[in-house]
Image (cartoon, rainbow, N blue to C red; front, side):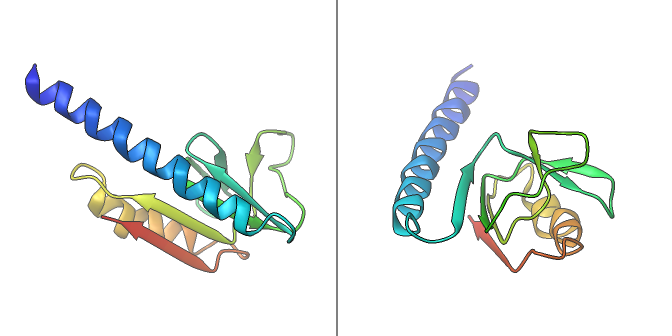
Length: 112
């Protein structure tokens, strides 16, 4: 039980840090053509036919949405992921390979 509680606590701290960093990033680009999204924004990766929920995404210019959807972005410029023991390998390998198939994707930030 204590191990589970510690895991939840760590997740909450990381989420809070993400919000703080994304807020600072959003403030930094406020007069530019960038939009910052955190945690629960869905991303469609058409060449792999999969959805992802990156921890942070930055889009330049207008949002491009998945056809027939109003809640699913297809044009991230920058993606950031917080690594955990259970997802580290997937985030570094398979998910990164999927992200690289997105034409607008330029930078991948991994937070360990």
